[in-house]
Image (cartoon, rainbow, N blue to C red):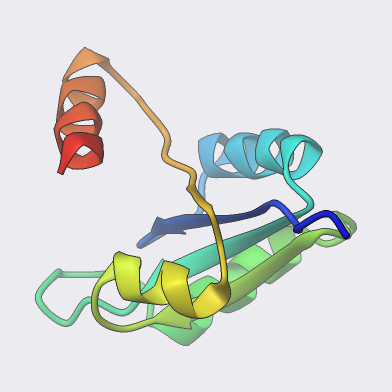
Length: 107
């Protein structure tokens, strides 16, 4: 039996943007399941609560069958393991984002 290709797209999503939705749609066409993981980061100043961000994302992606929305505390690596995922999806806005993400991937 083929193992499901599960991806996690982590972020604060404060608020969710059209760019986020575009990445979610693209990922949903590549992977069997995409989990949008809303970070509960008490050290970061946020506009919306985690529950509000989860609700906004669920409303924004309604109709995309293979996408789920969840929230998490702690390290993304721990969440990815718990979810049984084998890919982390990230978005890039500019070249400096790529440099940062590349360093993180090497870690």
